[in-house]
Structures are given as C-alpha cells and as structure tokens.
Amino acid sequence: MPSPLFEEKLAQSGLDLAPLSVETLQVNVTRLCNQACHHCHVDASPKRTEQMSRATVDRCLEILERHPAITKLDITGGAPELNPHFDYFIESARALGRHVMVRHNLTVTIDGNPQTGESKRYLPEFFARHQVEVISSLPYYQEFFTDKQRGNGVFKKSVESMRMLNEQGYGKSNCKEGSGLTLNLVYNPVGAFLPALQGDLERQYKRELESKFGLVFNSLFTITNMPINRFKKDLERLGAYDEYLTRLVNAFNPSAAEGVMCRSLISVGYDGRLYDCDFNQMLDLNLSEEAGKTIYDFDLDRLLNRRIIFDQHCYGCAAGAGSSCGGATAK
Image 1 (cartoon, rainbow, N blue to C red):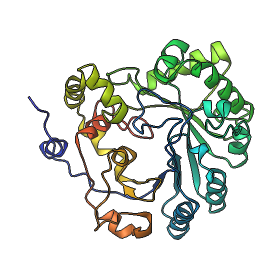
Image 2 (image 1 turned 60 degrees about the horizontal axis):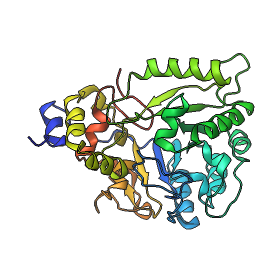
Image 3 (image 1 turned 45 degrees about the vertical axis):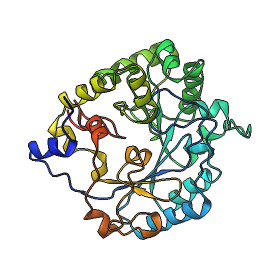
C-alpha cells in the first residue's frame, strides 16, 4: 500500500505549515568533500567540482546586510571549507555582526583539500578567532560504527580534529573556564532506523568521549537519515526503501512537524538558486517564480508568503522527535 502524501498527512492532522520567518540563510557553497559518506544526501565526494562563485557569495552578503532579521548564516557543503571563498565569506559575515555556523566534518582539517593538497590545519584557530559555531558530524563515539558509515580512519581523524578544537577553547562553554566557543556534534543513525532520544545520546556521547579521549562538546543534534540520493540508493539496493518510508510515516509526530526548519530558513544552492531546505535543494525542488527562484530575486516579503514545497522525504523531519539542522524539533 503506497504511503499517504506528506501534505495529506498534514491536512489529516489539521496542520498548515506556513513560513514563520527567515531567521537563517543556509548556504551550500560546494559539493566537493574529502569524504564520500554512505548516508550523504548531497552526494558529495572528492570528485565533485561544483563551487559557489565570489559574485554569488557577495550577493548573499548583500542580502544579510539588507535584512537584519536574518541573524544567522549557516554554511554547508560538501565540506564548505573547500570553497576558495570560504574564509572571505566568514570574515565578511562576522563584520556584519551575523552569527556564523559551519557544518564541519572534522576530518577536512586533517585531510586538507583532496584536489589541490592545500592544508586546512589552520581551521580550528580561524574558527575561534571569528567566533564561529562549529557543527560537526560524528556518527558514533566508537571507531567501528563511525568508520563503517564514513570510511576507514575517519574516527581517529575526527578525534584528532576535536582535540584541536578543544585546545582553542571549543566545547568548554559550560565549564568554569568556558570560552563561549560552541562545538555541537551531529548523530545520524548507521542504518535504516530512527535516532534514539537526543538527550540520552548526548549524555552517552559526553561520557564516552570525555572518559576515553578527554574530549568535550556542547550539544548533540540527532538528524534522521533522509531517503534521498545516496542513502535512498542504498535502501533500494537492499530492497528496504518502502519499509523505511513506512517506518517514517508510522512515526509521524504533529508536534515535530510544526517545528520543521523550512519554516524559519531559506536554503541557497552553490549556483544561487533558492530552496525551502537543503534536502529540497538536493532534489532540485526550486522555489517558484512567485517566491523568487534565485538569490538575485530575493524578496523577504514574498518568501514569507510562499507555499513551502513538501514531498515524501519530509516524513524524515516529522518522524518521532523530529529532525532539523538543529536536531530534534519536539520532546
């Protein structure tokens, strides 16, 4: 039996998920990455070449300067640090007084640029100097499960990179010597199931990482694996796609749905096109002409009055405790 359309499920629950604000401009600056993770919804890898141009970066900065209500810049990729204008983007956004978050995979600091060989070991100090919030994926606090999802040696490199961030003061905001530098970790399940409760996992991560490696961080975000792109192909190869989607549908939570990130965020692709979220971006679900299709058509009033584009993958954000770039959306 086919799963009900996501919008039908919303209607059955009496929900009309209209935009609430545009608090965050989330910008995907590259598809290039030093890794090729099994769950990656971006299909990022060392072979990708897509990069945001300096002109498009400048346009994003113009939007931030023009709209003080957009208080956060969320930079993602690929490994966003591999965009040649990455440092400039951060420095300029911070000069505008914006809070800057970077989706940092940890290992890029150790591996550097896979295409040019450029070192990225300066990143922890650079992040600290500009008070960047670092959000880093770490599938598990054990080596076997992390390497299974992200490749051999990833866990050890991640530990080394976290140690470098801790040395700069990251993750110590809750300690007496707190620096105010935020390091948050992201958990994705290793497989076709929903994440465990975010609070429980956070306590496990903190206990294990500190006791075994002396590492600290601030918060853990749980994010559900979206049934799109690379992860969807794996599910289909295993004959598990329908089963996984059914699991998401059965776990639909109206409270989680109300907190979906597309209600307070706009996603910008490397080519300047606009989307409701990063997942829609990877499915090429571009905004309508009426809402403004590119960063050059950006109109805040039109964006606040748009209809958000939903599809079946949206069940991932509304299942269980919910899933967003900031972790769970419901208790």
